[in-house]
Length: 165
Image 1: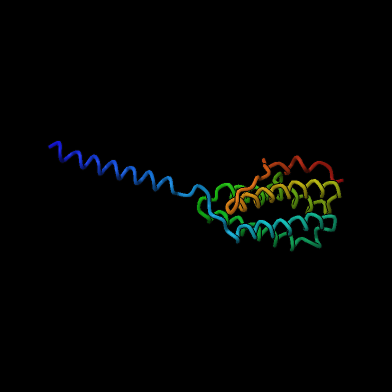
Image 2: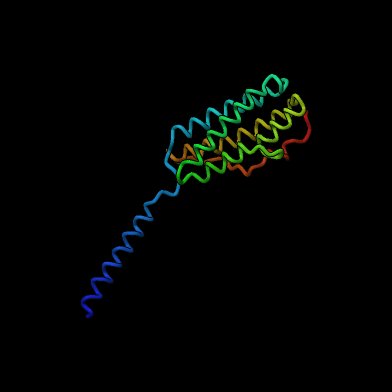
């Protein structure tokens, strides 16, 4: 009887070893995507340009702002639909959040209510949004080649809203 159980135990051990090897080969982060990188770099440029234009009346840019928000939503959906892409998707979620205390949500809410934004406010918001996009761009670039990324803790929403200088 012993001769029957040894091959079975050996076979089970080899199967377990093979499964462990396969699990170790499973990616923990999505591979590099030129589309994801392009989304991040293009939308950063468009968003910062719109922030800079917010010294002009909201009514002159409302359609442009809504279109930008839709493109950002599309980039979020692309990221969310990519396997093993949790960190980039979370960063897109912070960028696209439309809440009144969120990064861009606070900006669009303030601009639409006030009609224009002040120079100092635009400079602060420009800096916070640029940092958020830089983090996202770095995350995408790291999928191709390892580089150091700036940190982003989600600040730049309500705490960057004080004053309309």
